[in-house]
Image (cartoon, rainbow, N blue to C red; front, side):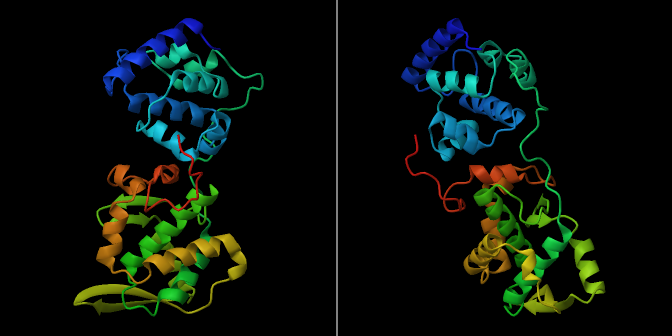
Length: 289
C-alpha cells in the first residue's frame, strides 16, 4: 500500500516546496490538485470529512481546507491518507491520476460498491410543504418577505441543516441563478398548495417594486419536523427574516456553495462543509492544524 521510495521522493519535494513557498511542486501538482484528488478518493470510498479527519486526528475544517488546496499536506499525512483511503502513492502522484485506478491496486478486503456517502438529494415534498408553511406562519406578516426572501430562507435552512447534521432537511435541490439560489420544482409545489388551499398568492408592492407574497391558509404539521430541524429554521428566520430582498440576495451571493457553482447548475450540498465565517454554522474543534 505504501511505497517507501515514493514517500521519500515526496518528502524531498515537500521540503523544496516549503522552502520556496511555491504553490506548485516540482512534480507539477498544485495544492489545489492534491486536495482535489484527496476529495475524489474520500468520496469514492464513501467516507465523510468527519470520518477522515477523525482518523487523521485533525479538525474537520483543516481537512476541508486541505481538500480546497488552501492547506499544505505533509508527507506523514499523505502516508496516513493512503492507508485510510486505501490508495497507491505511485498512482496518486501520477500525472494521469484516476481515483478508481489508484484504489483498485490496494482494494479493501471487503469489496463494497464505491459511492459517494450522500449523493443527489431526494425532495421530501410533504416535508418541504410543511417547512414552507411554518416559515409563512412566522414571516408572512413581514412586508419584506416576498418570493425572493422566502427562497433564500429555504436555501439557508436546507444548507445550514446539512452542514450541521449531514442530513437533508427537505431534500430540495437549488439552482444557481442570477438573483441567488432558487429551489427547483418550486412553481409546481406552490401551484399544488394553492390548489389545495394551503396558501394564497398575493401581488403587492414593497418600496415601490412589485412583490409576490404568499399567505398561509393552514398551519404547518409540526409533527413532520424534528426539534433540531425547527431550531435551524428558527435561527435562519431570526438572522435573516427582516432582511430585504436585495440584502439577502447579496448575502447569498457570498456563500461559498453559490459562489463556486456554475451558473444555471445545481448547487451541491457537500459544498456547505467548505464554508467559513460568517456562513459556517457548525461548531468545529477550535484546535485546527
